[in-house]
Amino acid sequence: MRQLVLAGALLGAICAVSVHAQSASAGSTLGTVHLPKQVLADGKPLPPGTYQVRLAPDEPKPAVGQSPDAEHYVEFVKGGKVVTREVATVISAADIDKIAKGRRPKTNSAVVELLKGGKYWRVWINHGGMNYLINMPPA
Image 1 (spheres, rainbow, N blue to C red):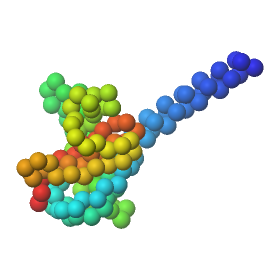
Image 2 (image 1 turned 60 degrees about the vertical axis):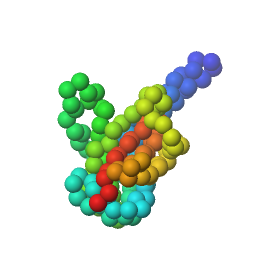
Image 3 (image 1 turned 90 degrees about the vertical axis):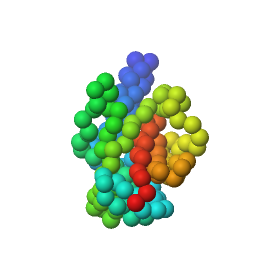
């Protein structure tokens, strides 16, 4: 009986890891954000409004010395259509404390804020403990 319980627990842990890995795959929704002002995303104006943000199927080419998973393209989706995409910096929960200060989103939520000096809007999505930071200038 104990072996059956252990086998069930092991199978449950494997399934949980598999589901978590799939949730961060291309096309999966990271969260919903509301942009209060127009910003530039991928060099084009992105009007204010509410958007779903999801992982795009491709990734930017890493810079020399950069981890291949340090950045990822994300898509801004409205009404089921991709409006634009932008590069997100991806930071693990273990590393975010070393980098970020100030207000942070709770797990599976997002924060949109104008950074000091008004030069960039930051969309910060915490999805399953991974942090996706998208910085876009006002349009």
